[in-house]
Length: 288
Image (cartoon, rainbow, N blue to C red):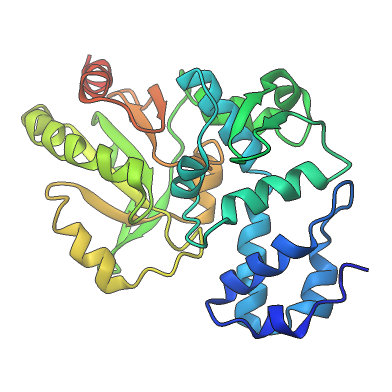
């Protein structure tokens, strides 16, 4: 029944992602799964719309681990604004729609309580998320899954197109930093990383950044990335690859930072924004 989309919804001006969100606002029904195959085949037929639909539903299994991680680290649920910032959701009401899609799916446990007026999350059942097979392993790995293990090898390309191999980091303390352009918590973290990298450069410390714009299908131009790169002097700027993302604990929360010592072991894994003092302690731990 809910596939009977009105012409007005599809005719609304805006980006392809906005059109998908506006449709979902009207058609998400409690207890009824949102079937991407039906939407792609019967409602959204333009390639750009299908790409936007794929991006949104790729977030489906990333949201619960992020919410649980935030609750564990911050002692409170993330706000709708923080969810929007984390996943680059730019359409008004988009975070609310994704939470409604989660709540409507009968396959999933009810692990969230929300304020009926504001839509803000009021309570998170972290054990329910941890116990669900779709989320448990990813949540465990995203929080601390690589600490005490060898840093995975990787090959990626710089912004200029040159190949970069992690073998060049052998026997050097370093940081592998996953982020995306215009990510608010990343923008808070980056200046501290630049300052700390400069402070510890004489001791051989390297900071390698893995930009996830392409992984997340974000509409960010090379010119925008290049302009922002000017704010990150002294850092090695790479494009993250799917293989690199998978190797590094399947990163889904940004920023995520992996501090590696001279022996090539991950000694600290930080998720989300952290104050300079904690970053400094992680630098020192990798330098020991």
